[in-house]
Length: 433
Image 1 (cartoon, rainbow, N blue to C red):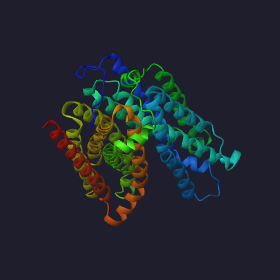
Image 2 (cartoon, one colour):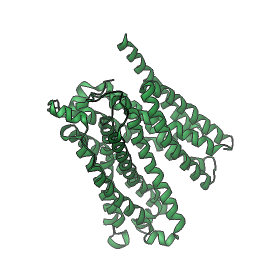
Image 3 (cartoon, rainbow, N blue to C red):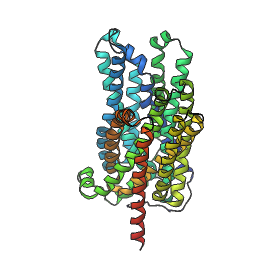
Image 4 (cartoon, helix red, strand yellow):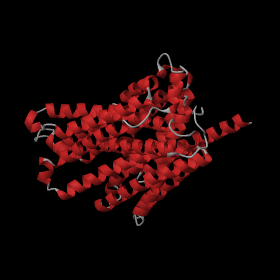
């Protein structure tokens, strides 16, 4: 891996400026991810309001989930375009633009007319705004990792990237809790009349607050140093990535695959799977989901701090082994009746925190001049591919191999993560010899 070129003391502790940058970045990331995922928590009322009443309910829901998925498909476009300008014009500009592009369509969704008012224009507008959200988050996540990593000393990159990843997780938890509160407080008719708009309006307003807060952030020292030395890439940064940094791209794709398996299967899909496959009560499944999301946020911070102490490769090795064990423990317990479901789901959420070290590996894999483009293209393309294919693949695997199929899939990607870690450690020993 290429070491980051940082014009600062590697061993100094985080100072007040660093902590402010990390806090503002994590807050903005939480609000932006809240805006991105809250859509799925209101899929049922959206399916009733944005499609003809004569539509079969399950088909209307499929169409809404298709609009939700369009956001994921738009991520690579946003990530590649915004990363290009991030490597050319500066990290801060794209970092601020991404949160603006998320806040605007989120507020817009909350103000949209429904099918009864404008007909088919309603779902088309909803699709358009969802695509803009996908473009925004495609630039936000890799851009935020690069931004915080280039602001802190090299030996604090782990906790910097992990704090941002933890913030993204908090955004998912906020969306889940707000959705539960609105559904519990309002009648079904009130939810259809106006309640569904509330989370989008709230998210849009707080998104613009995040835009304002990011005005106080400064450009990264790494980019400023490259600009001063005229080391910025003259042509297309992505072309240089493809020509000279293919091993780094492969590394990033593989660790992103493990990340998507852990997040999509164990955090996003498991609450539904435990109800449909293991007959866990919805209330208990919701409790487990929220506990796991909280311990995931804590786990990200723990693995990020560990990365700064023992290195990201060793942390990945230990963390991937823990992910393998936790995933099997959770699903074996469910297969045996699920007596310890909530406790084991909390442990699994913490184990999924190994994903907090993934951005560290990707940041260090690319040199600063093409870091944003290399990380963004690799991460977004891999996430669009594996994130999009994982849900239907898990459905097929469950039908073929039984209830433990999700644990088998996550376990296979964890083994791949361990293999990547061993290759990196062997490379480090060879370079030190």
